[in-house]
Length: 450
Ligand code: ADP
Ligand code: ASP
Ligand code: MG
Image 1 (spheres, helix red, strand yellow):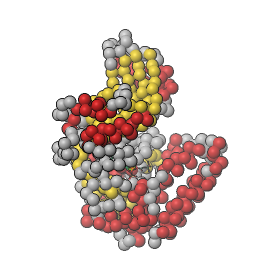
Image 2 (image 1 turned 180 degrees about the vertical axis):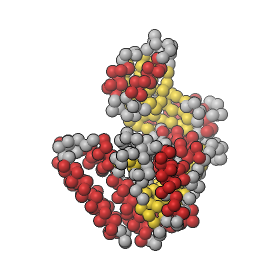
Image 3 (image 1 turned 45 degrees about the horizontal axis):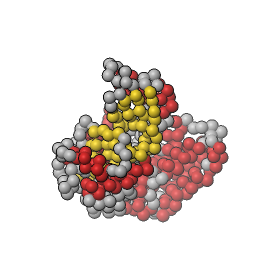
Image 4 (image 1 turned 90 degrees about the horizontal axis):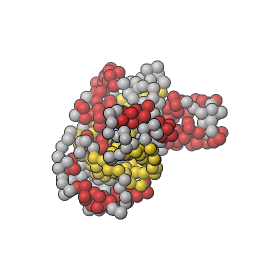
């Protein structure tokens, strides 16, 4: 059994869905379960609608919703055998239109926003299922929400793995064993009481990983718009090369620090079970892609001790200067309790003799965080920063690497430097506008091109 997950660009239009059909057909012997994302940019469009409800722009939601529905209708019309799927999408969109119209004078609740955001996956999966059925495959469209049971943290819900494992085995496995191809949705779930939730942006990869781990599949295939995990984001470094292999740890570090190709949590359930992730290009299925598996020295990238470079923008640095307290018991606990209380994830931490710097991505609770931290010391905040991460198992035993990194980064000013305990990554903070150039200079240094 395998999971084949198709991202937004891999189901973007009728042609792309046609390619999905051929890929799934070529995998039938491996007994696939298909997980799909929304058509590309549809989730952005739905979130815009949901967030504008009850604002001054709320009156103008009809047109953008109609455009989203028309896009699905157009794809459905271009694919033979999809008229029932199109009717189903149109009827669901009509309900959504009524809901938004009824709510136009108020902001939507987080639960309502998740319900709207998740429509894209429900709609795309209808189209993909119909196209596969029309192609002669025995399929079953499966609503993942009763299987993917999560907590109620709307927008970034956490699945309850024990429940999900049992339900996936009870409900998906028999379908596969009966020779059917289940088609289901990434990204979405529901609370135990049935309220729709989402797993966070890019969450379809995580869905694929969770289902793969639950079912003990042979591999999880992530079909996307590039040839695999690369030495850098090809949008930043056009000459970036595809890696044929990477370890779970490397993939997780790269994803955490901005490599959008995988959701940061994807490797976690699969690493535990030792199930490989294969990242593949749906436009070029014949290319080998990247296999992500247990820690390995499998491949050397030429002479480079590092595997890849990633970067993440929109970072805020919170600095705390507390000369008297830093060396005392309980100070760090008090510090982290503030971030915990405000449910804000800390990415990078660096501490000096009298001060500590912490980076966060989510600024929504910044003001109350700063208020609370002021009890602990002097606080100053720096905005518009980026984190750059240099990742590779080779970092472990290559002396003098820091010097090479910082020479390459010059003349950009490096503000915070941190090396993970696993010693396979080196991260630092630069000004946001310098991020892409820094990545290119590092790529030149370690891979000889930019
Ligand atoms: P999907 O819609 O298939 O989930 P995403 O847009 O989420 O695809 O992720 C694929 C994109 O990730 C690529 O188009 C590429 O620009 C970006 N990316 C960022 N870092 C990397 C990297 N190291 N290797 C490959 N792609 C990367
Ligand atoms: N459609 C969702 C998003 O755009 C999930 C995903 O693509 O993985 O975030
Ligand atoms: Mg993605």
